[in-house]
Length: 111
Image (cartoon, rainbow, N blue to C red; front, side, top):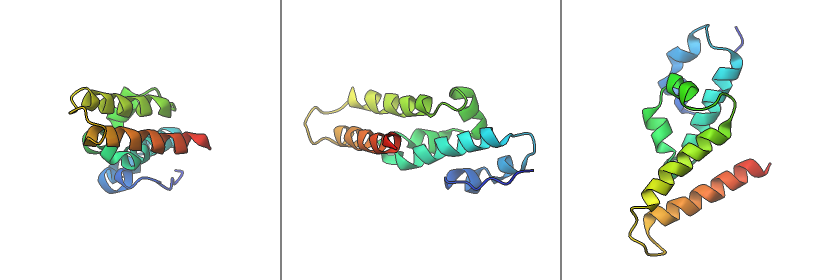
């Protein structure tokens, strides 16, 4: 069995038993870890939904395998839902979170 070094903190700490099962290929483990890492990086910007509520199985079912853009769009949708309920001023917390998310994801996909 191939050993995968996780980049996220969520996968090994919360779902360590999932990692130990032999029926997961390296690609699916890496994809789930990448989604959790994105959720951690954007935790205060909507990524908390992934980190706090989704199991590895949920991630594999919810998002097209190996397409991190689906996870990014999911987080963006969470943010946009919050923006629809915001107070409307330019310094309200929802708008600040949205700007932070855009900066994080722009830097992530620039490389």
